[in-house]
Length: 336
Ligand SMILES: NC(=O)C1=CN([C@@H]2O[C@H](COP(=O)(O)OP(=O)(O)OC[C@H]3O[C@@H](n4cnc5c(N)ncnc54)[C@H](OP(=O)(O)O)[C@@H]3O)[C@@H](O)[C@H]2O)C=CC1
Ligand SMILES: O=C(CO)COP(=O)(O)O
Image 1 (tube, rainbow, N blue to C red):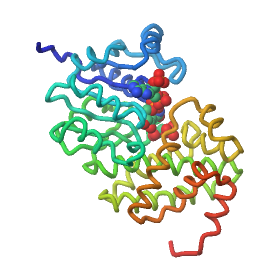
Image 2: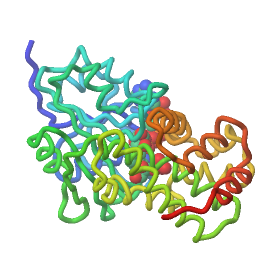
Image 3: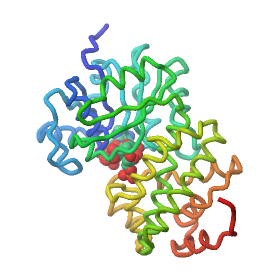
Image 4: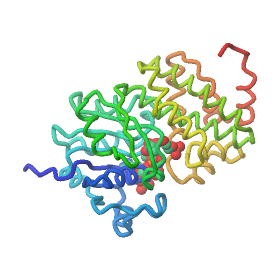
């Protein structure tokens, strides 16, 4: 049976960012479906017409439809935007794979790597959905709340398919508030979004210890160097890391307390245990889990990433934040 695809985009993942992106597209006048995996959460969003916990005061435009039935959402929608945490990414793709039409295109805003293997999500998506499926990724400095509030925001969209990039830009771009840049480097755009989370944890740790702007800025600058080194080794273009998905997102997440990764680092720097810090945040902290994968990639490719290494030792080897800071400061003097 052929069903009409009356909705241009379905958003899978009704957390803070999926909801914010759905609001942004709906505000441009496009019908959009937002799917969440817990029906009681979806019912609450539908009843209140806002996400009162994470995006209070950002009412849903009329063209945003809530849906708890995944099959129905996929059947009605031309294309699909996935906005779940990286640990759930493969699971969601496995669920939708049998439901997709041959020409349905996929984009994701998830920032992270495949747990354990450290694969790029584009590799995971191609494995699950097949090599001919058109894929794209969006990334960049975008706190969900500011986007939902309609405050000016810029992102990068990357795909090997120009038409898919152009259609996504059309759906999201708004002359009032949402500027979409295009970028052909899918590897770099994905790595920027994953690695900046680890560096943001380190910046938070420094602030939690009571260090100042000098230390934070040094971590951002050297963190950018680490990100670029690993990215280039994995086939990315170094220029990508000077753009929205690299430097842009790195500065945003290292400097503003809207970042969960930064707040997680601050809590650890102030002496909280890892579980306590995660509980305080109450939302996904991608960098916690992904520190393992980023560190593993650095080791596999023999890339020096001292900040990532210290964050890894704090999170997974019981090192104190103070000793990690001392280890970084005591490194041998070197050329910049
Ligand atoms: N928030 C932001 O500012 C930005 C976030 N991102 C990225 O977007 C992704 C999502 O983050 P964000 O929305 O902020 O996170 P949240 O913690 O706000 O929400 C995560 C959502 O994913 C849902 N979820 C978890 N597991 C599954 C699953 N198996 N199937 C379906 N849904 C699931 C959760 O549902 P439940 O809690 O009900 O289990 C929750 O609604 C992350 O990769 C993040 O890095 C990117 C840019 C900005
Ligand atoms: O990716 C983000 C902003 O671009 C959100 O960062 P956090 O996940 O650290 O909150």
